[in-house]
Amino acid sequence: MKQILMCLILAMSSSALAAESDAVAKQEIDHLIGHLAASGCQFNRNGTWYQAPRAVSHLTAKYEYLLERNLVPTAEAFIKLAASESNASGKPYLVKCGDQPEVKSAEWFGAELAKFREQSSKAGS
Image 1 (cartoon, rainbow, N blue to C red):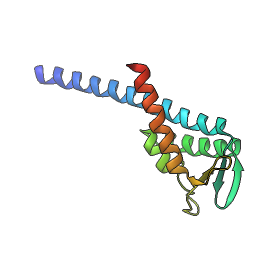
Image 2 (cartoon, one colour):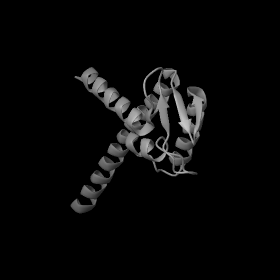
Image 3 (cartoon, rainbow, N blue to C red):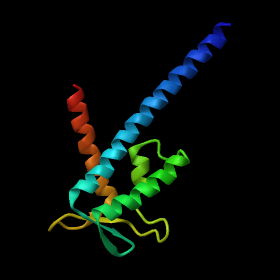
Image 4 (cartoon, one colour):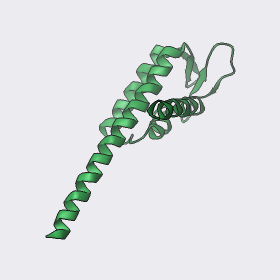
């Protein structure tokens, strides 16, 4: 009986941790998409530059597709699977902000994720 009780407690703990992890990932991904929306930057997909709202729409659709399939447990997974490259051509996405040189979107989103996490950890301290 003790073993069954321990298994139930472990299963409930794992479920709670997974739900907390999912909530953190969603918050981080929402932040990344919102950051792009507010950035005023341009987004290059398959050789064409788009304004941020169109890029946000595209990435949101990719995110929702992956989310339905439980393929984005972390913000890193979102960056890798939805925000780094075209699934059709394999070409990397690029971001260009103002007069700054273009950068691969994976780097751009990765840098913003690091900033967001640092700010979140400071706010939680």
